[in-house]
Length: 133
Image (cartoon, rainbow, N blue to C red):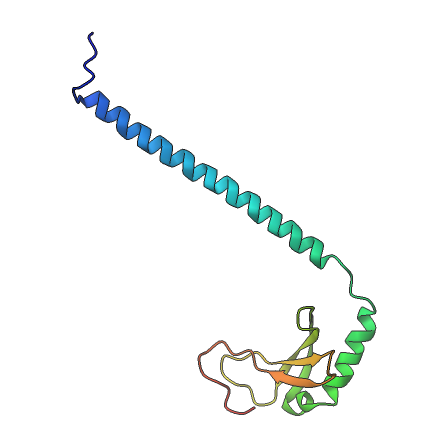
């Protein structure tokens, strides 16, 4: 069989299509591997950054709960059991049950460590603001 370099045949088209598809698939696979590597590195950095224990955790929780009980939060509802510490804002988020519930809202009492003040965050999921603050 003689090779015709300047003639387009059905198998030359097939080889061209397979090469383009192969290059695309290899590039896609390499992109996934690179993204997975970055995701793993970001996850490990986040784990290392958050692995520091919060000193005096129990003391600060009890202090935050005492501040919340003597604030506007106590007028708006009762404190629940859920507690979350936000290290970025240095504040405690205490779940609460509102006396006058707002639709699509899940209120929390937010106690700032910097100011020692508490405020109600309604955490509404709808596009409307709560009826009363």
